[in-house]
Image (tube, helix red, strand yellow):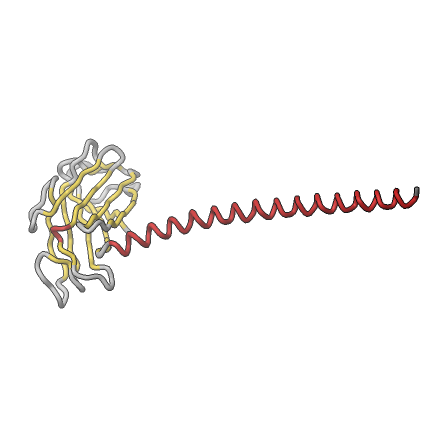
Amino acid sequence: MKTFSKIAQQGIGVIIAFIMVVIVVSIAASVITTTASSLESVSNDVNKDTRNKIASSVEVSQIYITKGVNVGEFISGTANVSIILKLRAGSDASRIDELLLQFGTPVSSQSLYASGGATYDSVSFGYVYLIQGSKFKSGYINEGDIVELIFTYQGLANIQEGDNLLLNVIHADGGVVPVDFTAPRSLIADVVYLYP
């Protein structure tokens, strides 16, 4: 009788050890699954950012806006938005007339095409060269060039303090440079820098 009791106690001990191993393995599996999911999410974000940077040959250096007469808001139809662009390092020259701008506010968005020169309005952007690089060619953004694109903001509402804004610079080949920014809390100057 003693041997059966001893064998039974050993069997129960093995079962308890087996259950503990299963619990430890299941906890480890859930930790690995959670980590893998988190890493996948991060890698997708990095992949998207990298793809946008590789696909686009231009880089937004600065965005500022000049306004009309009212303090505290930028009036639709009178405020002018300026975007300073340069060529991304290692990129080939980019034609300015192949760019499309999309400017979005909380209540509206606006798409703009190149006007072909310095003239601008609420449907097309103009451009001027602030710096002409050593490989300057009119109508292109080349190595060393710094170009200002300018347009008149036209939306359903005025841009106000704290508004979340979005600018997409889209190249004809599909490359997109997205820039998210927020209007500052104090819009008291005639010129307000929005980005960076």
